[in-house]
Amino acid sequence: MGVEIMEIQEIKKQLYHLEKELLTPQMRENSSKLNEVLAADFFEFGSSGTIWSKKDLVEGGLSVLEMTLSDFAIHPLAEDVILATYRVHDKTRNQKTLRSSIWRKNGDQWQLFFHQGTLAK
Image (cartoon, rainbow, N blue to C red; front, side, top):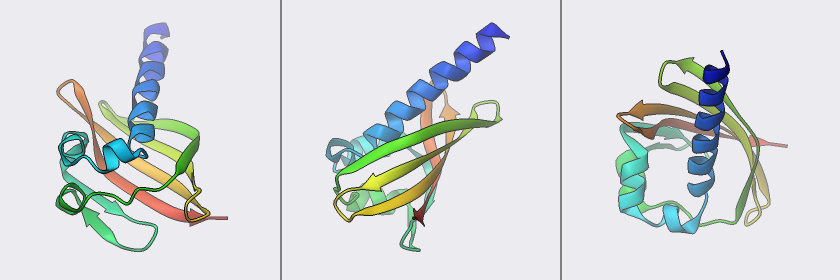
């Protein structure tokens, strides 16, 4: 049981780092890094109502905004599949969103399979 808790804590740490990195300009403007982190079949339901694919984000990049992440939690769905939930405060647009991401392990690397942002109060 102790090993399992340690594994979950390590996974949470890894996914928190990846989610936080996805909010940075260094990641959002780097198509090769986005290509590594996003699964081939990635898709997103944006808070704007737009549906995005991996191709959209890798070729078009992501908007660069000043954002902070809080209330990060993970919820295992299956072996090597994790739901991450958290809040983002977009300081650039003075907007708050609830976020959810499904991460899937591909070999020894976590890749983002699905993401959704929902406007929050």
